[in-house]
Amino acid sequence: MVYDWFNRTGPSPADPSATPPPASEQVSGQGPEQAQEQPVEGSSDPNAEALEWARQAYARLKAQQEEQKRRQLETESAAEPPFPDSVQPVQINTQQSEQGLEQDLQQVAQPAATPVAATLSLLEQAAAQRAERQQAITAPGAPALESPAAPELAEPSLGDFDATFTWSAEVLAAQGKRVDQVSLEEIDWLTRLRQGLEKTRQGLVTQLLDNLGDDPLTPEVVDGLETTLLRADVGVEATDRALGALRQRLNQEVVDPAEGLRFLKEQLRAILDQPIEASGQPLLAPRREQLNVWLLVGVNGVGKTTTLGKLANLAVRSGYSCLIAAADTFRAAAVQQVQVWGERSKVPVISNPSANADPAAVVYDAIGAAQAKGTELVLVDTAGRLQTKHNLMEELSKVRRIVDKLAPEAVVESLLVLDASQGQNGLRQAMAFAKAAGLTGVVLTKLDGSARGGVALAVASEAGLPIRFIGAGEGIRDLRPFNSFEFVEALLAR
View 1 (cartoon, helix red, strand yellow):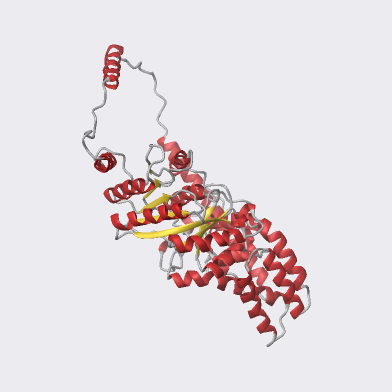
View 2 (cartoon, helix red, strand yellow):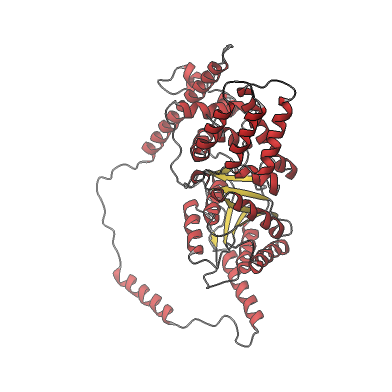
């Protein structure tokens, strides 16, 4: 079953798939109280209600997983061919095989015809070669570029009913999810996100709780919070905004530690959401049945190519047709790396095997192939560049002009990939790229190896760029669309 990560609204109440299964469809060995949702009885203890909600979600997911295993076993048993009574030998005509091999060798030995006349100018030769490549890509016999079904990867499995699961369930419940709307993929991602932010959280939460203490907040306590947030690379502007609102509230009423932490989370979410709301797109998603071109830019070493491969996998798993343009022609083995990621996600890769090929020419071929095959999403891997190198930044502008010229109807996004461990240096990169590349968003990577996860707030407040995706691990599924509520909860989880 496809889970669309670009549309996490969940089934509507009128959706029949959202209703609990009837008793006849429940898993063998599971009682009705385990397989379908039961209303949570009213209780004065909110923790008890949350725990009961998590239990119901866990029981439902477990029932679904057992049912899926049972159906898979039935399918495999039905598809297994009967064992033959006897095996008939296969006759092979070795004489015909040798003749066919001889013909192939003769064809290889013949010199290839020159496709371009020597009398043509260099520009005419380049145009002719481009036309040949385009024809080869879009020919009727060429491989289809539409992405197949989701790649064969190990599906997430349901773990123990532990504190991690209950925390993940509570985060989903707090966003308005019903028990029957909780998916195993979301639980799996929240677990990964919390683990990925462990290094940042260890220092940040410990210091926050030490500063908050057990008594009502005072101006001195807020001053201590300021130092803590700055050490996590939250940034001066975001820190001043969040704590300024907290100081203003302290002037009006007494605030206990629990309410202070809740209010701080609310302010941090508002900072992250402001550029997202200004963009008019709460969740960045490719438009269906329309060409979308996403350019991935950034300096060397931030995980740009890896991020592109994960995005391709995410798009395929969400039901989109996808294509990769290997336009990083300057870095050694960059094209081969992209091809490996393409194979893992079963996504076709358009590349130019020539040494130091023109990146714009690769994008030209990819756009043409996508238009001919009706592909919905083209991911462009651009060369890593320093924000201070004017010539390379100009090359990036050239790629953008090619896209605008060939596909004026396409929805173009320019996403900056930032390494979270670089902290304030990453913020300076964002400021520079925003001017030269027309950035529309940021992908924050390597959160699992950084104690500076707060840089997301600095990027949102000072660069004014929406965080669109975050990566919290090295696996192919460790990249997901950004959700400010989930991020802040994972960042400040106790």
